[in-house]
Image (cartoon, rainbow, N blue to C red; front, side):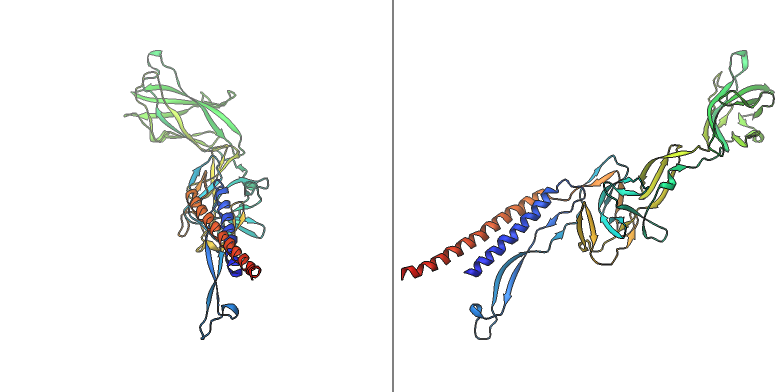
Length: 401
């Protein structure tokens, strides 16, 4: 009967640990990336032995010794993926883990919010754990953005034009010259000029020639009316091939009229415009994000972008080799390291930006387990109570003698 008390106590102890596990799961219902722990129990038996449990005849007696709480098993099932506003909020749709580095320590996470730290590294918000990317040899390394905080200037070499210069402009004395303003030009050091181009038509033999003059934002002449650039059109309103690309003297900038520039009748209105201008000034880093391929993407104030390395994803054949260390992080038991992939390679899922993975706690399952544990605890405590009553009755036999 004393054995029955110990067996009952083992049940109460195991169910208490089960209650603690369920309590932790429920408490983390809204913790991003939390993975619930499964509740399990295992029976305990003793074999052989003598004393009161000994049976003669060479038979081995097997007696139950109660129950113990089973080894915890983490449920790595996918949690819901929820939209956020953070450019570096990351989640994984499918298998795989983000790799985080802290000195000689390596941690793994299913999701997380990241920021660019003061030292230039991309780190997990609130920690110094650095997000790892894949280097040229496929190894996980931290990425420093200090050298990428500015975008170098690029000199302007070509201005491409499009749309129509009205062939009827200038006739009847009612039309005005065509003007294209706010054409931004950059030199090699990032210096900026804003040009205004004026197109003045002259017609001879049914064909139109346009004299082009250019002034900067201060009114200084880049190309004067004395020596204008000349754009000619042939019959059919097409640009004369000999004038479809005109070089601005002293600036080595080409005015390109080779495509989509016409000379049809449009009354006094010309719609010609600068369709594209290459070159840019110095740009400051404005946004760090992740593209659809799982690469770090930088955007600058000069409208330039740059793609860097792919974010590293760890492929675990058996995620149960991981153990929790808190804050949604896991650490690998042992020295083996998992293979590293990039987004959507074999073995790992798709890396998502501006999204976080929610907890995978199933509240209905937890409440169902909670009821079973409560009943199990009650039953075990009843066994202890009954065993105690029986022992108390034994103690009373002597007094009845």
